[in-house]
Amino acid sequence: MKKPSPYFDVIVVSASAAGIGIALMLQKIPGLSFTVLKSGSIRESFRRWPKQTRFITPSFHSNPYGLVDLNAIEEQSSPALFCQSEHPCGEHYAEYLKAVVSNEYLPVVQHCRVDKVLKENRDNFVLETQQGVFRSQYLIWATGEFQFPDLAPFPGAEHAIHYANISDWSDFNAEAYTVIGGYESAIDASINLLASGHHVHVLMKESDWNKQSSDPSKTLSPYSLDRFNEAIQSERLTITFDANIQSIKKTADAYIISSEDGRQWSSNTAPILATGFLSGGGAKQIAHLWEWDEDDRILLTEADESTCTPGLFLVGPQVRHDEQLYCFIYKFRQRFTQLTELLALCLSLDSSALNANNPWAGQCDEEQCGDCAC
Ligand SMILES: Cc1cc2nc3c(=O)[nH]c(=O)nc-3n(C[C@H](O)[C@H](O)[C@H](O)COP(=O)(O)OP(=O)(O)OC[C@H]3O[C@@H](n4cnc5c(N)ncnc54)[C@H](O)[C@@H]3O)c2cc1C
Image (cartoon, rainbow, N blue to C red; front, side, top):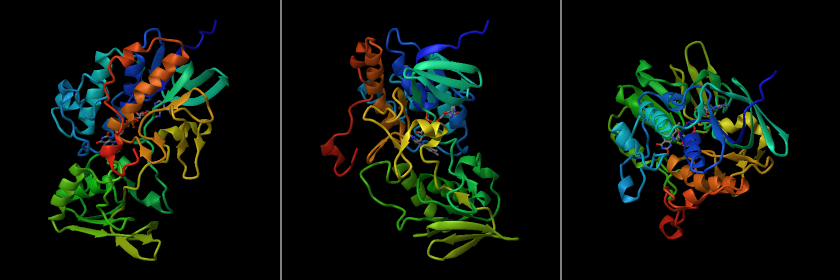
């Protein structure tokens, strides 16, 4: 006889920072059944970061004084303490996530990529996975963005190397490189290449590399600024502004990079693309279950639910409400409590364990934020 597929109140896809964070909240609700499905291993996503890349948001063990470490996804823990670093690298942070899952006995099914999601009837999600079919009443999608780089932002981009496909900057051994992009990953690429003695030419769409904004998601982090200001001293860095790149052509001996205004640059090495990730990141895998706006962004209700598929929720860096971006851990973890409360309410379960202590501090405060939209 065919075994019935497992059924849960809630399924979380997948188990990196966002998926583990929300699963820890769900675990506080007595009687709520849930599981977490993860393609590959828990550590996979952060282990894919280039070896030299570090967290730009600082970690500090301020937990005992009521300020949970900015990069923590579990309120008692601190990546600063665990990794013994203010700016952990991907490998160390991956170990931190693994330790949290194991300490908290979270039910994570690893190597269980979700290939297809169907809504069977009004109340049931059916997930086809590497390990068979799973069913649930509610579905939380947490598949991030790092594994979903935009590899084709313009014609010829296939000749470039995307930042997300670089594992170690010490593998680069030519004299000079061209980096296309103007934000955190472009600056990180440039700093690492300059540190190894290369010449670097950065082609930036922006007219300034240091634009000011009171939203920390729209301005370079102090960590990047400090490192970049130091790297500039090398005099091996050239920055070209207002370069809106439209194509790359590969000739017999060079890569010809062209911008919208007709300027061209030649590079002897494959350009480095630091132009970002697919809009919606991993949520593109179930694109039909979301409504997308004209800028290709996911539309969500105030409760982070899909506007066209009731019962489907988004957590992680793609959550966005108008100008409010939740692209950092310390931002998107603030949404966990309200989502868990809502699910408990829908399932008629007791959520008082959540109200007792909201670890993630308050939302933004208008007076402190100035012109910030958050
Ligand atoms: C270079 C870089 C530096 C960053 N620095 C910071 C920082 O300093 N501070 C900060 O707060 N944030 C930082 N971020 C953003 C940070 O990476 C994200 O906030 C965080 O990783 C998001 O966590 P996540 O769980 O949403 O996604 P991810 O960590 O990307 O994990 C997504 C997971 O989903 C899994 N998955 C995908 N599809 C499926 C599927 N179909 N079935 C099952 N599993 C699936 C993947 O295997 C992956 O493990 C940085 C990002 C980058 C790229």
